[in-house]
Length: 112
Length: 111
Image 1 (tube, rainbow over the protein chains, first blue to last red):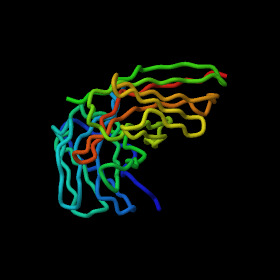
Image 2: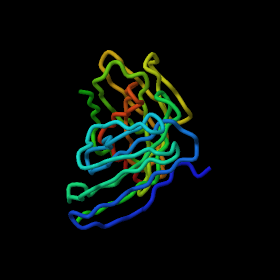
Image 3: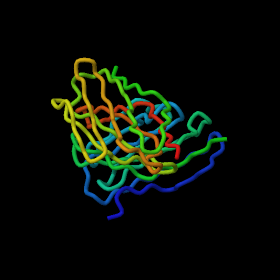
Image 4: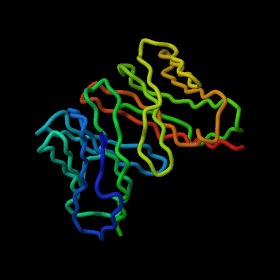
């Protein structure tokens, strides 16, 4: 099993550009999550999904959209990138709400 | 809303014990977790404790939970240089299985 993978690992965007981050898991997990990690702030939840075709807002959803068309994939979109979205983005998945979350290796995004 | 607080830095000497502390606000959390993040990597679950437990021991790790004070601690015995990492405390929110993370404590182990 590859576990949770994220694509790409690094990306530099100019302000106003758009991009999609892909998260894939091969563990047949129902729950998937997108977090951002900023220095001194821990991880903050952007959006999450409790199953294929469902999404919900987390703590910091503004400026991001997500889709979960297939159970194994969770996409995070930035329609018009801003410097405030410079961060490290982590995807995670979990089989159920009371189980541990398995994290991907992260995507380092810089918006100039 | 829920909040989880940790101190940002801890420095210890190799062989000493490390104690990382965490306070949380949501008394309805079912589980409390400790995750470890090594440089340039994602988070890995170290250990967890169910909310009706006071203590959990797992090899060099001891988790203490004081529900009355909403205080969680992680003790690492015989700390090694390989334990240098950022340690995150997190409480579990049953709505969608969301985790609320603390800011992370950067543990530095000096030889």
